Figure (cartoon, helix red, strand yellow):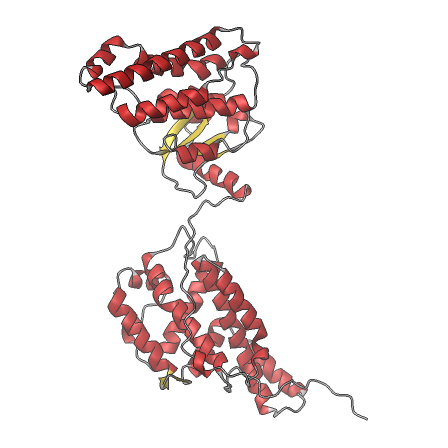
Length: 449
């Protein structure tokens, strides 16, 4: 298709439908009130004037600036008025007009003439359902056959986003060439890619995967954010006292600050997991420090320390939870609180999706729980969720914004985060033998006379 035809031919044809097709107009006109008959006549006369201007531009010498129609603003205003009053006019589709006008304006932003040549790339479209945050994207690559565009032709917001990108001018012409193959009655997203790949049978799924790579390279989001905005739960706040030594938790306080900065729930989970990680490896150091009563550590002490720290992460977490669950919390021990909260969670949210999720985590003993063994059960869940977020192995279940099972959603958003917040704030609220150093400093070495 010639570039000048891509710009003007379809626009002229669609304007003919609403301002010169006498048979269609008469049938519609007769059903209107006299007031609306006068209004549609007035708009149609003005549209006819604009149509004639467009035809003059189409027929002009293609090497001159007189090929550029400069009345798009007036034309769009008239079409908007027509749409607001007569949107049911046979064959009229404002979205199609808006598509043509928006892309044509984009072309003329970067070109003062329309070259007398064919469009050098042919794009074909398919409907997709990607629902990315950015609403639209078009590549800007040197090899035009590798171009991809994604947007919703019916959405004004999507079109506005699309024309904000830079791409080879031939891609914009190609998008106009495809106008007759777009369903403007359907508010679907479309992905456009080269006819060469289309005819070669390259799957739409493969093109979508490539689109995601382009968008990721541009720093754009291709998966939805899992927003979690609840403030941390801290029932131990009244136990905090200025006379306590909270400076020893400066690292944890910093991580908690990061935790509040995060909005995505998986990122928040990893931040709070880092706090648990800090505490579970601090626990054996505190035990050694307290047993030494502030005196210098010996090599044998260090050897025992290394041995106690050099355990697998899941075991270290289990040890922390086991001891922490015995700490008093609002008149009861924490294990009773945690187990009561778990049962309340099950009553409110049920087990829909929960057992399936626990199964993929290889945790199958939910039915044998009591307050005494809950620490083991929950420590395994906390650890396995961490592994499933961090790891992305072919043979391992991976939690992500795209793979976020309902059981995981319920568990994280309605139990796990609140449980971990309460545990952390309890452990930091006042001195205990689990994660609090007893002395103001640890003696490692001193030169003697």
